[in-house]
Image 1: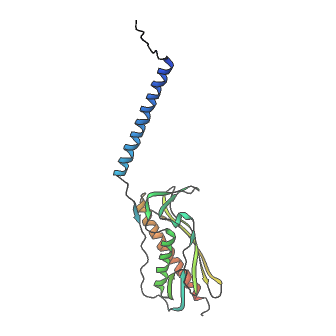
Image 2: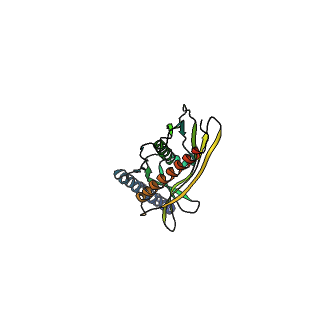
Image 3: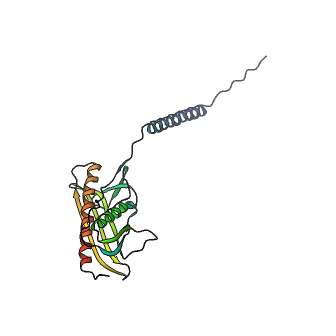
Length: 223
């Protein structure tokens, strides 16, 4: 006589197995969704757009030349303006940066080069160069950049705010100081409109710096 053995599964074990199978299916579906999203994103990356400002043209000398050299140092500033991402904010303390809308160069460098070009155009100095580690000169223009950003509120503006200082390097003293703070309204609400307004703001700022330095040197004893 044969004995037939029968295995009877406990109801609790069957329930546990079913729950584990459901969990495995859920994990598989989640992995599949993430993979499809990743592949779709790689197939259509969002382009990065770069913007630049127009530097002042170098024209004929405006005044009789001064037998001196001028160095323009990159202004000290927040790390936000030593990078190329365009900064936006409001009148509150909070700020952010665009991911795919960027300057062609960091704002601190763009302001430095704009000042170099504007001061060269005066013909007032024997040479005007950006400060390097091996540079030497008679005067140095330096300062601090506080704001170079889009600001939204009642309207949208391009805000530029900096302090400038001209030093006589040989005498070891400050010849001239100036604070520039101006909000240039935009003609639209897109990034391109902000860039156009900032371009205009930078041109205005460097022209005011150039005029102030000219006035200071006119009253400064000749070397």
